[in-house]
Image (tube, rainbow, N blue to C red; front, side, top):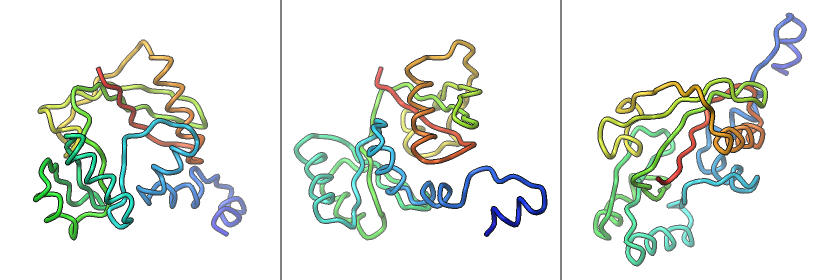
Length: 171
């Protein structure tokens, strides 16, 4: 309905409602990206028993730190011990594996093409995981072909006309 009204008034809609909904649900967004073959961080729904066990095993057996998150990103915490993991379950909705020593880019994509690529530079080692405000962005003039292709693939999979896509690679 919104699209029809907008067209009648002479406006065009960027980012359809379904695409925005898909991106607002972080787990659905991550699953959509994975289904489309876009590489994502390891993620676990803490409301799904099997995912809960996988997250616990990644931390307990694999020695990985987990970034515990709420869907609204209002509360984010890094946990590395079984005790912290169990105590934080009621507060968080999903977890991702903390990737340390990585490079991260943000690409701005419009209608399937990257038009700006920036390197994220954290102020401290946990800035990527905890707060975007702890990062500075530096424009990149020479675009990494691999990064661009992954960003364009992600935007297409999500159905977004205009978006920012974050890509991280281990060094």
